[in-house]
Image 1 (cartoon, one colour):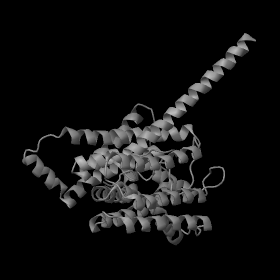
Image 2 (cartoon, helix red, strand yellow; image 1 turned 90 degrees about the vertical axis):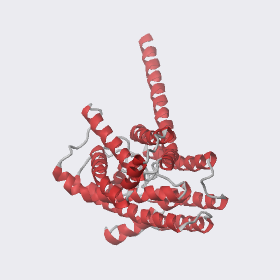
Image 3 (cartoon, rainbow, N blue to C red; image 1 turned 135 degrees about the vertical axis):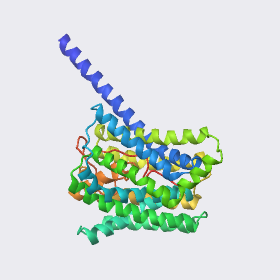
Image 4 (cartoon, rainbow, N blue to C red; image 1 turned 60 degrees about the horizontal axis):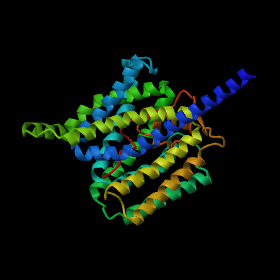
Length: 368
């Protein structure tokens, strides 16, 4: 009998430790995810070279995957020329999405970014139906898309900070991220890379593409002028950049671990909470946010996104179709995942091979 009691006590202790560990992972994911938007905004505000900032983040993520793979803490596909050649167009589209995202970040506020990011299901649904022979949206899905659209229209109509530059970048970002989502679905289903391999190829190839855009945008010239002009080292800017890279790695770890530790539904709920936390933090810490009417429209847009997610997920938490699984992998592996709001379909079950890795810059880069 004593042995049975001891065994029972041991099991209870293990269960308690498991609950504590899981709770810590969920809290860590929620905090790092909701704060990442603010940290990225702070970084791009303090550090006036967005292309270089994203390159540093690409380098950090690629280096982390290589290092952890070398230490056998994770497994990723080997980086080969043949696969790189096939993956390069996808990486170029990914880079364009991040490039337009970063410039939207410079000229618009967090709320504007979230609204336009939330519009992607509308264009993705249209593109899937038109180009990938996917079924037309169900009535519930169509209703959720209308809610998203009405929230976005209401936000734009009440945006007192409207500028042509900001909304031009917003439109470019919306087009780029939609193209990226639809195209990456094809890449994921044809190349057969695992999540970590996908992350490695996406970031390493994007890092190789970055110098072309430094020249194209003239950012390199501004950087050289600053160096020649004897611009002093700014500790605040260095801290902002470092925090941005560190938080990107934190959300990579917590996103990956939390998805394995909890159900797809719990992970999704956490992602929705993260969105509201991001809006709340942005409102509290500074004045770079929308007014009451704009915030109400923003919340309506987020609510439409939640309804959309439910409409494309089967009862029981499974994905509606393999293409939606592929969409989910693409969003999670690039900064395409928005806090678990998987706008391409339902979530994987814990333990699936294609689990999430949330990268530093993408959907979480928000406006000013």
